[in-house]
Image (tube, rainbow, N blue to C red; front, side, top):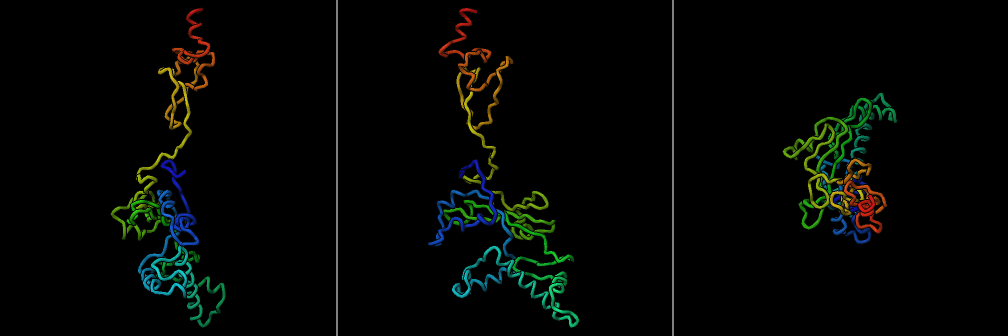
Length: 275
């Protein structure tokens, strides 16, 4: 199933380098990762924007022994959302606490967050009048050979899926010159690269090959694709490509009798001799 005939579609559970990493050594199995090249994954949009970049500047400087995961310029998928959730709660708590007539309670905090807007690690965090967060945004990533990292495939951000119809910073600012808007929700900055390095959509209509008898050519053939040849019923209408089981079945099925020539009992010969 690791061939040009298949496309792997994964959520963030498998569309990441952790599935290719040895848990004991922490090393990535590059041969295995290259075999999965062409995989397309969907995951929550990662942190982005000015505030996120500033956060990474500081996160990279921290001691990984004191703060596990730090010391490098990346975070887990969900860390920015957890960060913004805590700040949303703190903003709501500050709003309630600043009102001398309010009491800190769950209903008060829920009501306070409806009017909160701030720049978080995941972009603009803005609650609507019902207390719901902004529309969901998902990253579309592609495990590809042209990842700009030498000698192995890696995941590349190629587009976005947006629940709403608002403008997308990814398309507008970073990769606008290459973008392709499929519809109001799917926006691609790059064409997906499939297994083998092709940018053309693979034919996923995979069928088993089958053998058949060609009346015209008088020989057994094989349709390797399983769909190029249409089998016909030998119903007296001049069928050409028939099932191989009609060969030597003691019935004349081809208009030219080729299906019975050369059989242990040659009915065409009997037909000629005895009429």
